[in-house]
Length: 320
Ligand SMILES: CC(C)(COP(=O)(O)OP(=O)(O)OC[C@H]1O[C@@H](n2cnc3c(N)ncnc32)[C@H](O)[C@@H]1OP(=O)(O)O)[C@@H](O)C(=O)NCCC(=O)NCCS
Image (cartoon, rainbow, N blue to C red; front, side, top):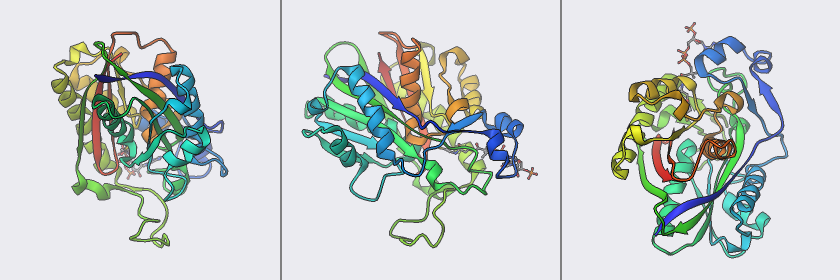
Protein backbone atom coordinates (compact mmCIF):
# COMPACT_ATOMS: atom_id res chain seq x y z
CA UNK A 1 0.00 0.00 0.00
CA UNK A 2 1.28 3.45 -0.94
CA UNK A 3 -0.03 7.01 -0.68
CA UNK A 4 -0.94 8.94 -3.80
CA UNK A 5 -1.96 12.53 -4.41
CA UNK A 6 -5.56 12.48 -5.62
CA UNK A 7 -6.14 16.23 -5.83
CA UNK A 8 -4.40 19.56 -5.32
CA UNK A 9 -5.46 23.15 -4.66
CA UNK A 10 -3.90 26.50 -3.87
CA UNK A 11 -4.78 29.99 -2.66
CA UNK A 12 -2.98 33.31 -2.96
CA UNK A 13 -3.89 36.74 -1.61
CA UNK A 14 -5.10 39.21 -4.26
CA UNK A 15 -2.68 41.98 -3.34
CA UNK A 16 0.40 42.10 -5.58
CA UNK A 17 3.54 43.90 -4.40
CA UNK A 18 6.03 44.51 -7.21
CA UNK A 19 9.75 45.14 -6.94
CA UNK A 20 9.06 48.76 -7.88
CA UNK A 21 6.63 49.01 -4.96
CA UNK A 22 9.39 47.78 -2.62
CA UNK A 23 11.88 50.28 -4.05
CA UNK A 24 9.62 53.03 -2.68
CA UNK A 25 9.98 51.81 0.91
CA UNK A 26 13.51 50.38 1.05
CA UNK A 27 16.81 51.05 -0.76
CA UNK A 28 16.48 48.49 -3.56
CA UNK A 29 15.47 48.32 -7.23
CA UNK A 30 13.72 46.01 -9.68
CA UNK A 31 16.90 45.19 -11.65
CA UNK A 32 18.81 44.08 -8.52
CA UNK A 33 16.00 41.90 -7.20
CA UNK A 34 15.39 40.24 -10.58
CA UNK A 35 19.05 39.59 -11.21
CA UNK A 36 19.93 38.33 -7.71
CA UNK A 37 16.71 36.35 -7.00
CA UNK A 38 14.51 36.05 -10.13
CA UNK A 39 11.54 37.46 -8.17
CA UNK A 40 9.37 40.06 -9.95
CA UNK A 41 6.42 40.32 -7.57
CA UNK A 42 4.88 38.61 -4.56
CA UNK A 43 1.42 38.32 -2.93
CA UNK A 44 0.80 39.91 0.46
CA UNK A 45 -2.17 39.08 2.69
CA UNK A 46 -4.10 41.85 4.39
CA UNK A 47 -4.21 42.38 8.12
CA UNK A 48 -7.42 40.43 8.64
CA UNK A 49 -6.33 37.32 6.73
CA UNK A 50 -4.64 34.64 8.82
CA UNK A 51 -2.76 31.55 7.63
CA UNK A 52 -5.79 29.30 8.21
CA UNK A 53 -7.91 31.52 5.91
CA UNK A 54 -5.61 30.81 2.95
CA UNK A 55 -5.24 27.17 4.04
CA UNK A 56 -9.04 26.81 4.01
CA UNK A 57 -9.42 28.00 0.40
CA UNK A 58 -6.55 25.78 -0.81
CA UNK A 59 -7.97 22.80 1.12
CA UNK A 60 -11.48 23.21 -0.30
CA UNK A 61 -10.05 23.30 -3.83
CA UNK A 62 -7.92 20.20 -3.22
CA UNK A 63 -10.89 18.28 -1.76
CA UNK A 64 -13.06 19.24 -4.75
CA UNK A 65 -10.35 18.16 -7.21
CA UNK A 66 -9.87 14.86 -5.37
CA UNK A 67 -13.65 14.35 -5.15
CA UNK A 68 -13.25 13.64 -1.43
CA UNK A 69 -15.55 15.18 1.19
CA UNK A 70 -14.25 16.89 4.34
CA UNK A 71 -15.96 14.22 6.47
CA UNK A 72 -13.97 11.47 4.75
CA UNK A 73 -10.67 13.01 5.85
CA UNK A 74 -9.19 11.12 8.82
CA UNK A 75 -6.05 13.25 9.31
CA UNK A 76 -5.19 16.90 8.64
CA UNK A 77 -1.53 17.88 8.54
CA UNK A 78 -0.63 21.54 8.11
CA UNK A 79 2.97 22.52 7.42
CA UNK A 80 3.46 26.07 8.66
CA UNK A 81 5.85 28.26 10.62
CA UNK A 82 3.43 31.20 10.77
CA UNK A 83 0.37 29.82 12.57
CA UNK A 84 -2.67 31.96 13.40
CA UNK A 85 -1.59 31.70 17.06
CA UNK A 86 0.62 29.41 19.20
CA UNK A 87 -2.37 27.17 19.85
CA UNK A 88 -4.73 25.76 18.77
CA UNK A 89 -2.87 24.48 15.72
CA UNK A 90 -3.76 25.70 12.23
CA UNK A 91 -4.79 22.10 11.51
CA UNK A 92 -7.45 22.28 14.27
CA UNK A 93 -8.67 25.70 13.12
CA UNK A 94 -8.86 24.37 9.57
CA UNK A 95 -10.74 21.26 10.73
CA UNK A 96 -13.40 23.49 12.24
CA UNK A 97 -13.69 25.66 9.10
CA UNK A 98 -13.98 22.58 6.86
CA UNK A 99 -16.28 20.69 9.27
CA UNK A 100 -13.89 17.75 8.86
CA UNK A 101 -15.17 16.28 12.11
CA UNK A 102 -13.60 12.83 11.71
CA UNK A 103 -9.99 14.02 11.45
CA UNK A 104 -7.02 14.04 13.79
CA UNK A 105 -5.04 17.27 13.43
CA UNK A 106 -1.36 18.19 13.59
CA UNK A 107 0.87 21.09 12.53
CA UNK A 108 4.33 20.29 11.19
CA UNK A 109 7.03 22.85 11.94
CA UNK A 110 9.84 22.56 9.41
CA UNK A 111 9.59 26.04 7.85
CA UNK A 112 10.12 26.01 4.06
CA UNK A 113 10.79 22.23 4.13
CA UNK A 114 7.42 21.71 5.82
CA UNK A 115 5.51 20.31 2.86
CA UNK A 116 8.15 17.66 2.14
CA UNK A 117 8.29 16.73 5.82
CA UNK A 118 4.50 16.54 6.11
CA UNK A 119 4.23 14.54 2.88
CA UNK A 120 6.73 11.98 4.20
CA UNK A 121 4.80 11.71 7.50
CA UNK A 122 1.41 11.48 5.77
CA UNK A 123 2.51 8.86 3.26
CA UNK A 124 3.92 6.72 6.11
CA UNK A 125 0.58 6.94 7.92
CA UNK A 126 -1.19 5.69 4.79
CA UNK A 127 1.39 2.95 4.12
CA UNK A 128 0.76 1.50 7.60
CA UNK A 129 -2.98 1.46 6.90
CA UNK A 130 -3.68 3.54 10.03
CA UNK A 131 -5.15 6.45 8.06
CA UNK A 132 -6.87 6.34 4.66
CA UNK A 133 -7.51 9.90 3.49
CA UNK A 134 -5.19 12.68 4.60
CA UNK A 135 -5.46 16.38 3.87
CA UNK A 136 -2.04 17.95 3.62
CA UNK A 137 -1.61 21.73 3.53
CA UNK A 138 1.44 23.97 3.29
CA UNK A 139 0.49 27.51 4.33
CA UNK A 140 2.50 30.52 5.43
CA UNK A 141 2.20 34.28 5.75
CA UNK A 142 5.80 35.26 6.34
CA UNK A 143 5.17 38.83 5.18
CA UNK A 144 3.62 39.35 8.62
CA UNK A 145 7.09 38.73 10.12
CA UNK A 146 9.15 40.88 7.77
CA UNK A 147 11.15 43.93 8.72
CA UNK A 148 10.22 46.19 5.80
CA UNK A 149 13.40 48.21 6.39
CA UNK A 150 15.68 45.15 5.89
CA UNK A 151 16.32 44.86 2.15
CA UNK A 152 18.12 41.54 2.68
CA UNK A 153 14.87 39.78 3.69
CA UNK A 154 11.78 41.84 2.79
CA UNK A 155 12.31 41.37 -0.97
CA UNK A 156 12.26 37.58 -0.75
CA UNK A 157 9.01 36.41 0.81
CA UNK A 158 5.32 36.23 -0.09
CA UNK A 159 2.15 34.64 1.31
CA UNK A 160 0.13 31.65 0.10
CA UNK A 161 -1.22 28.16 0.69
CA UNK A 162 -1.20 24.90 -1.25
CA UNK A 163 -2.97 21.65 -0.46
CA UNK A 164 -3.04 18.01 -1.49
CA UNK A 165 -5.36 15.11 -0.67
CA UNK A 166 -3.58 11.81 -0.09
CA UNK A 167 -5.37 8.50 -0.57
CA UNK A 168 -4.22 4.88 -0.63
CA UNK A 169 -3.18 3.09 -3.81
CA UNK A 170 -2.16 -0.52 -4.49
CA UNK A 171 -1.04 0.27 -8.03
CA UNK A 172 2.44 1.17 -9.24
CA UNK A 173 2.04 4.88 -8.43
CA UNK A 174 2.19 7.28 -5.49
CA UNK A 175 5.00 8.42 -3.19
CA UNK A 176 7.77 5.88 -3.77
CA UNK A 177 10.54 7.49 -1.67
CA UNK A 178 11.05 10.17 0.99
CA UNK A 179 14.32 11.57 2.36
CA UNK A 180 14.51 14.06 5.25
CA UNK A 181 17.42 15.68 7.09
CA UNK A 182 18.17 18.62 9.41
CA UNK A 183 21.26 20.53 10.53
CA UNK A 184 20.25 22.25 13.76
CA UNK A 185 23.84 23.42 14.17
CA UNK A 186 23.18 26.00 11.43
CA UNK A 187 19.84 27.09 12.94
CA UNK A 188 20.92 30.62 13.81
CA UNK A 189 21.40 31.58 10.16
CA UNK A 190 17.62 31.88 9.67
CA UNK A 191 15.53 32.71 12.72
CA UNK A 192 12.32 34.32 13.93
CA UNK A 193 13.44 34.92 17.53
CA UNK A 194 10.44 36.68 19.07
CA UNK A 195 7.22 35.28 20.45
CA UNK A 196 8.48 31.94 21.78
CA UNK A 197 9.32 31.01 25.38
CA UNK A 198 12.87 32.42 25.04
CA UNK A 199 11.35 35.83 24.40
CA UNK A 200 7.57 35.78 24.90
CA UNK A 201 7.25 39.56 24.80
CA UNK A 202 9.27 39.79 21.57
CA UNK A 203 11.83 42.16 23.11
CA UNK A 204 14.33 40.98 20.48
CA UNK A 205 11.98 41.89 17.66
CA UNK A 206 9.29 39.94 15.89
CA UNK A 207 11.03 39.82 12.53
CA UNK A 208 12.82 37.21 10.43
CA UNK A 209 16.60 37.52 10.63
CA UNK A 210 18.79 35.84 8.06
CA UNK A 211 22.40 35.45 7.05
CA UNK A 212 21.64 35.41 3.32
CA UNK A 213 25.05 34.16 2.19
CA UNK A 214 25.12 31.25 4.67
CA UNK A 215 21.58 30.23 3.77
CA UNK A 216 22.38 30.47 0.05
CA UNK A 217 25.36 28.11 0.42
CA UNK A 218 23.27 25.68 2.47
CA UNK A 219 20.36 25.84 0.00
CA UNK A 220 22.55 24.89 -2.97
CA UNK A 221 23.95 21.92 -1.04
CA UNK A 222 20.52 20.96 0.35
CA UNK A 223 18.76 20.96 -3.02
CA UNK A 224 21.44 18.88 -4.70
CA UNK A 225 21.86 16.43 -1.80
CA UNK A 226 18.14 15.88 -1.21
CA UNK A 227 17.44 15.16 -4.88
CA UNK A 228 20.39 12.76 -5.16
CA UNK A 229 19.58 10.94 -1.90
CA UNK A 230 15.87 10.52 -2.58
CA UNK A 231 16.61 9.21 -6.08
CA UNK A 232 18.97 6.60 -4.60
CA UNK A 233 16.17 5.51 -2.25
CA UNK A 234 13.76 5.31 -5.17
CA UNK A 235 16.23 3.36 -7.31
CA UNK A 236 16.04 6.08 -9.98
CA UNK A 237 18.46 8.50 -11.62
CA UNK A 238 18.44 12.16 -12.69
CA UNK A 239 17.62 11.02 -16.23
CA UNK A 240 14.36 9.44 -14.96
CA UNK A 241 13.00 12.78 -13.68
CA UNK A 242 10.04 14.13 -15.69
CA UNK A 243 9.53 17.17 -13.46
CA UNK A 244 11.49 18.62 -10.55
CA UNK A 245 9.55 20.99 -8.30
CA UNK A 246 12.14 22.68 -6.10
CA UNK A 247 11.40 25.07 -3.24
CA UNK A 248 10.87 28.48 -4.85
CA UNK A 249 13.41 30.63 -3.00
CA UNK A 250 15.87 32.04 -5.53
CA UNK A 251 16.35 31.27 -9.24
CA UNK A 252 20.13 31.32 -8.80
CA UNK A 253 19.92 28.41 -6.33
CA UNK A 254 17.79 26.40 -8.76
CA UNK A 255 19.86 27.25 -11.87
CA UNK A 256 23.13 26.44 -10.16
CA UNK A 257 21.94 23.01 -8.99
CA UNK A 258 20.16 21.85 -12.15
CA UNK A 259 23.16 22.84 -14.26
CA UNK A 260 25.43 20.79 -12.00
CA UNK A 261 23.01 17.84 -12.11
CA UNK A 262 22.60 18.07 -15.89
CA UNK A 263 18.82 18.48 -15.63
CA UNK A 264 17.31 20.54 -18.50
CA UNK A 265 15.32 23.67 -17.56
CA UNK A 266 12.18 22.30 -19.26
CA UNK A 267 12.07 19.62 -16.55
CA UNK A 268 12.03 22.11 -13.69
CA UNK A 269 8.95 24.02 -12.57
CA UNK A 270 9.55 27.63 -11.55
CA UNK A 271 6.96 30.21 -10.47
CA UNK A 272 8.99 32.24 -7.96
CA UNK A 273 8.93 35.25 -10.30
CA UNK A 274 5.22 35.66 -9.43
CA UNK A 275 5.10 34.76 -5.75
CA UNK A 276 8.59 34.96 -4.22
CA UNK A 277 9.30 32.50 -1.43
CA UNK A 278 5.99 31.39 0.11
CA UNK A 279 7.73 29.02 2.57
CA UNK A 280 5.81 25.76 3.19
CA UNK A 281 3.29 26.79 0.52
CA UNK A 282 5.78 27.10 -2.31
CA UNK A 283 5.94 23.45 -3.40
CA UNK A 284 2.20 22.63 -3.16
CA UNK A 285 1.30 25.85 -5.00
CA UNK A 286 3.79 24.94 -7.75
CA UNK A 287 2.47 21.36 -7.85
CA UNK A 288 -1.11 22.61 -8.22
CA UNK A 289 -0.12 25.04 -10.98
CA UNK A 290 2.01 22.50 -12.83
CA UNK A 291 -0.83 19.95 -12.78
CA UNK A 292 -3.41 22.52 -13.94
CA UNK A 293 -1.05 23.55 -16.76
CA UNK A 294 -0.88 19.94 -18.01
CA UNK A 295 2.80 19.55 -17.11
CA UNK A 296 2.15 16.38 -15.08
CA UNK A 297 0.79 13.22 -16.70
CA UNK A 298 -0.04 9.78 -15.28
CA UNK A 299 3.14 7.73 -14.87
CA UNK A 300 5.44 10.78 -14.68
CA UNK A 301 8.24 10.76 -12.12
CA UNK A 302 8.03 13.93 -10.04
CA UNK A 303 10.62 15.02 -7.48
CA UNK A 304 9.71 17.59 -4.80
CA UNK A 305 12.66 19.10 -2.94
CA UNK A 306 12.67 21.73 -0.19
CA UNK A 307 15.00 23.43 2.29
CA UNK A 308 14.49 26.00 4.98
CA UNK A 309 14.89 27.22 8.55
CA UNK A 310 16.08 24.67 11.09
CA UNK A 311 18.04 24.26 8.94
CA UNK A 312 15.96 21.50 7.37
CA UNK A 313 15.80 19.82 3.98
CA UNK A 314 14.04 16.96 2.32
CA UNK A 315 12.60 15.47 -0.83
CA UNK A 316 9.93 13.06 -2.08
CA UNK A 317 9.62 11.06 -5.31
CA UNK A 318 6.15 10.57 -6.76
CA UNK A 319 5.02 8.38 -9.62
CA UNK A 320 1.92 10.30 -10.74
C1 LIG B 1 19.56 37.47 0.18
C2 LIG B 1 20.28 37.31 -1.14
C3 LIG B 1 19.32 37.53 -2.30
C4 LIG B 1 21.39 38.35 -1.23
O1 LIG B 1 22.06 38.19 -2.46
P1 LIG B 1 23.66 38.23 -2.52
O2 LIG B 1 24.04 38.04 -3.91
O3 LIG B 1 24.16 37.24 -1.49
O4 LIG B 1 23.92 39.70 -2.08
P2 LIG B 1 24.90 40.24 -0.97
O5 LIG B 1 24.27 40.05 0.37
O6 LIG B 1 26.28 39.68 -1.21
O7 LIG B 1 24.93 41.74 -1.34
C5 LIG B 1 25.57 42.22 -2.52
C6 LIG B 1 25.41 43.72 -2.53
O8 LIG B 1 24.03 44.03 -2.80
C7 LIG B 1 23.51 44.83 -1.73
N1 LIG B 1 22.12 44.42 -1.52
C8 LIG B 1 21.65 43.46 -0.68
N2 LIG B 1 20.32 43.41 -0.78
C9 LIG B 1 19.95 44.31 -1.69
C10 LIG B 1 18.71 44.70 -2.23
N3 LIG B 1 17.57 44.15 -1.84
N4 LIG B 1 18.69 45.67 -3.18
C11 LIG B 1 19.84 46.25 -3.58
N5 LIG B 1 21.04 45.92 -3.12
C12 LIG B 1 21.10 44.97 -2.18
C13 LIG B 1 24.38 44.52 -0.54
O9 LIG B 1 24.36 45.57 0.39
C14 LIG B 1 25.73 44.38 -1.19
O10 LIG B 1 26.25 45.64 -1.48
P3 LIG B 1 27.83 45.95 -1.30
O11 LIG B 1 28.51 45.02 -2.26
O12 LIG B 1 27.92 47.39 -1.64
O13 LIG B 1 28.12 45.61 0.12
C15 LIG B 1 20.92 35.89 -1.26
O14 LIG B 1 22.00 35.78 -0.35
C16 LIG B 1 19.96 34.77 -1.03
O15 LIG B 1 19.02 34.57 -1.78
N6 LIG B 1 20.21 33.94 0.01
C17 LIG B 1 19.35 32.84 0.30
C18 LIG B 1 18.11 33.34 1.00
C19 LIG B 1 17.00 32.32 1.04
O16 LIG B 1 16.71 31.69 0.07
N7 LIG B 1 16.36 32.23 2.21
C20 LIG B 1 15.23 31.40 2.42
C21 LIG B 1 15.60 29.99 2.46
S1 LIG B 1 14.20 29.00 2.69
